[in-house]
Image (cartoon, rainbow, N blue to C red; front, side):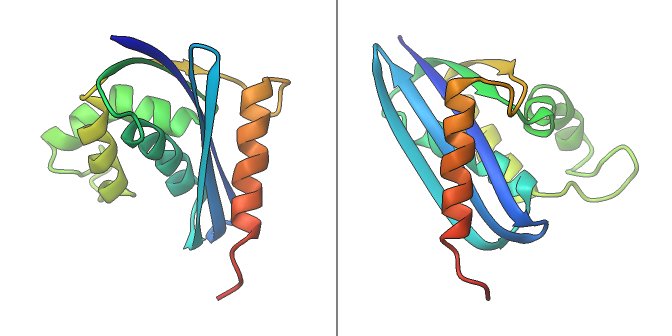
Length: 146
């Protein structure tokens, strides 16, 4: 099984507002940068999309280390999602889970790989995290106001 590192970040200019996401896939000294944008979105949706896009771009099952600065995504997929699914996508406070569509998409793609999650502090000198932040912001800025 190939061993890949996936570094991700999301950005939003206003929340909601113009958003962008970015991911870097690293494998054996090679790097592939991915990014995308949405005109009207939230930061949390962009954080989720970065991970989803990175995993969906892998052509086979891999051992993936995901380096992420979003506690929301890391905790959501490793801890909270089990209870959300058991409760029919309702939170402990009995409200609908926000971003259910993306959580379901992430849940579907993450099981195709062997994934480990590593939280990294954003804006703290992590080269690839800084690059993802730059790409995500660039993507968000590329969106015209609606």
